[in-house]
Image (cartoon, rainbow, N blue to C red; front, side, top):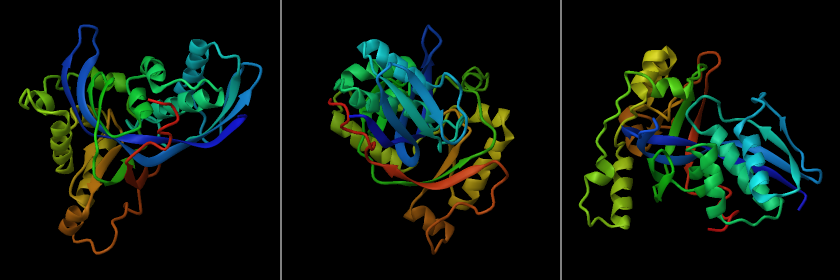
Length: 304
């Protein structure tokens, strides 16, 4: 195999994000539900025989040492592979949005190079590399909606109904570290998803209960108040979506926000046609209507 083209790297949304504590090393303990959406970057990979790794930016310029290149170097070092690759990235998922674009690129890079280089590593060997790159990377490697715990490394796959979302990214981006260090951040949200259930709750029961809670718009995002205090555009985006769709929430550490768009909400808003993003957005803002993905497009590229 000499090349792989049109490799997808989908974004994610945090349907809720609760900060339930903090570890001794400073990392925050989270509970969340991640879903994949059809807002994707596209990557192309061409194998090199000289061991060199080079990234080519087809749209916006990325940082020199982005997660994609770091993932390629990490897999090359771990495997001892003598091949290299030219990696072409058509970036579509906004940066600094809390949508996991960089982490998704890294996961798709690991999966693609695992195949392109003929390593045939199972997912269990790729996951530790992914976690070393960032807490969100294992989710994209797993490739399914998931209930997420710990610092992002504990994943329980979920089967959620198809969902539609209006997703809006203001021009401003937010530095994750500053949001997590904010004095406005609540760090003691009760761990209701697991701790509130009886000890004998089965895994299937947990998945069913969680899915029902998510469908009803359960929870909140603890990072949203610090983000709104730092960035007026986040508050503006939230208000815009709430006025149009009846609900809104920030994803991740922002600055992107989303609204759940479904039949019930449409009726509340009196919409007779398929709902659409507002036609006129402020300069530099990006928005689109998105569909949830049941599975990552690359599921199966590494055996379980």
